[in-house]
Length: 407
Image (cartoon, rainbow, N blue to C red; front, side, top):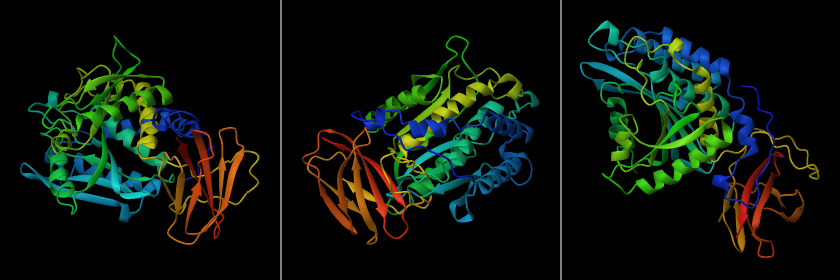
């Protein structure tokens, strides 16, 4: 994959989670309308992806199509898992692609969409699923394509569930046999579900539903869901031409995780369920692929925030003279606490820190230190603001950048 020419820009004196990040905007703007339309076209052409086609036919062909896409993006066999489960008399599969985080490799942000479609009792009810859920499938693939080479602090799982139209069977199987069977139980920071993002509302054509957990069994995950959902509404505004509108989670693949106590949110088309969904008219001709393109831009921006992404190429402020080449395989650097009041600790796995440069929002160098494997920096004299920490690896010349808030 071509390395992204990103610019390292930071917003200052504001809460990081609610601040537009120009670097993230650059990445969101790389979503391709051509790619989105082509994926939905391909998805539709693969036919009715019901559970009775799991051994040969549309469902397994779609699974193979997805695997080929991830391989083309550069994801490896080691990052790819197929989970088999029983769906009635048939065996279906979930597809899971894992991108490991640099700081919290065992904590996951899950983004998911189902790739099966509705196979009804009559031919008129059989659906090729361009909107439900070729549009959500396109979202996962575009996010995966764009952030493959961008380090994220949290690990990401891209999950394509099957069996959603038969009663959330695939997502339930994953929750039971993977999430809860992991020892210790899998640590999920957030699950973002994408299901049907292809139709604009005629009443509110420039809105997208941002779904939050309002279910009271359990209710312990509601507050965190609301917090992440409010952030996502901001990200929709920052990175797309749409406006996010609060809506409750409904019958889709986040529900088994919600009942498991996980924090879940979702994105859904503003028109609620289209009259074409779950029938033969769920085709690209009855969708608005430009609307899907805008929702995916918002999705990319949201995932960069939720997984805490760093750019692959650092274009530093003009008064920084270190021009060492930056690689995509940046060594994990742990900076804590953040926010901080008195001291900040910087730690790496090896004795590889050459220097630490601290810049304010104007690009002025305010502090410098020579490093080692672990270094503590006194920041008591700095004003309360957001600062840019640039850590240089003495072996490779790689640079790692991180926002740190001084309280």
